Structures are given as structure tokens and as C-alpha cells.
Amino acid sequence: MKKIALFPGSFDPFTKGHEDIVLRALNIFDEIVIAIGYNSQKKRYFETDFMLEKISSCFANYGNIKVDKYTELTAIYAHNHNAKYLLRGLRNTTDFEYENTIAMVNKDLYNGLETVFLITSPKFAFISSTIIREVHSYGGDVSRYIPYQL
Image (tube, rainbow, N blue to C red; front, top):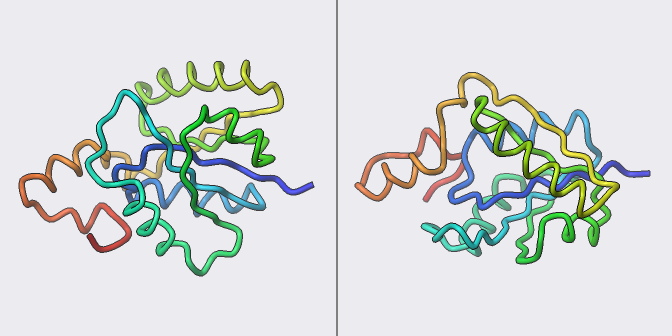
């Protein structure tokens, strides 16, 4: 059976840290679906379709990486796409506290779903989408933090 991992997130924007997690996870999973989700708690800076296009271009040469968008609960999306694993990156203990709670709820919603955490590579641990949005909104150069051109 194929090991399919769902890498969900708002990816607003998708960073080099996200890219690193996906590429390292290829050593563990047969297929990875990067799924851009709708988060009712966040107002998007970059449009979902724009991010879908940019992320897809990053992985155009990888047949085992797909990019999609969704609006339902992550656990339901995973179940409907036969993903038994959620892939999440952790930069620090604050990320762990937040992600651990979400992992427990997802497991409760879809009993066959396991969350796999990968520690962010040190060279990317300081990068956050929030900071990139802020720098970009003031006209700063964010090219060294993202794996595509804006």
C-alpha cells in the first residue's frame, strides 16, 4: 500500500522551510499532497490560486508531489484522499504545543490518521510566513525565504 502524506497549511506564503520539509519527507512517504487549506481565523495575504500555482511550479519535476486546495476539515480531506499521514514541520516548542493539539483532534476525527512531525532544518527555523508577509508588505526583498519568484 502506498504511503500518502498530506502536508496541510495556509501556506501564505509557502517558504523554503516548507519546501525543505516536503523534500525531506520524500525519504519517508511514497506520495505527498501539499494541501492549501482555508483557515477561518486568518485573512489571506496571497490568493490561494496564486499560491497553488507557485507551489506547483516548485515541484513540477516531482511526479510524487501534488498540490491541491481544500475547504473542508483536514481530517476529512485526508480520509477522502486516502492519506493515512499528516506531515507537519516544527520550528520550536511553541509550534509543537499548537500542532500537538491539532494532531489529537485530527486523530479523533479520523482514527486511521497519524501525524508525523519533522524538525525544521536549522537554517530555515527562523523563517515564518507571518514575517515574510510583513517584510513583503513594506516592499522588502523576501526572495531568499521563498523557493519561487513573486
